[in-house]
Image 1 (spheres, rainbow, N blue to C red):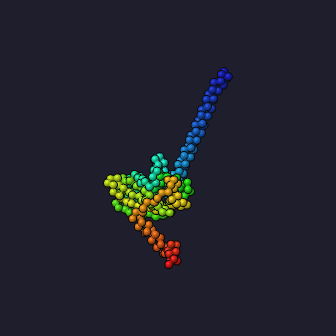
Image 2 (tube, helix red, strand yellow):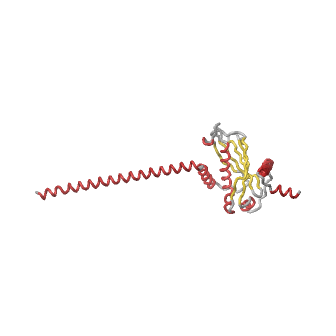
Length: 251
């Protein structure tokens, strides 16, 4: 009878032990899930803090837009004519607006930056710069606003190389309303070439010497303005313009 009782109790003891083991396993799994959840929360908080820091210290949207421009230009067909005008469509979005509900002045220059980059990617100038170990920077720019671009208004930003000298490309960019074709703004940009020159870039791209087009009248006046401004600033800073000094010496 005692043996039978022991045999009857043994299965129940095993069941209790198994139940305790199952409960312990469930607790461990629950603790593991909670620990993983806390780790995910900490990771999300860290990523959120990093994004907040980046957006506070850097113009993140500028760099993201640059990546988009590169990808778009990469998948578009190349433009073999270096002097050909290229057009990039755009639209005035909420983050472009000023207090008066128009596209703010700084956005025009920002859009011109991306349009030039797109232009150089497609006509091969960016590739030529990498081959020559050169780069380009903006040496001067002047924009004239003719009519404001309103919220939601679509436009084409047309970019073309007008002329060049031994150091720089001269680029014209126009904001053309898609509604009526009105030129809302026009910008002239002097793109200085560092560690190379425009002639070498064009020679590499075209495999021949490319003759510079005649300078338009407005571009001639603009270059004269830049030269006069440079001389005036040198004089105010107590610096002597090398060209002027040579002319005085010749006299």
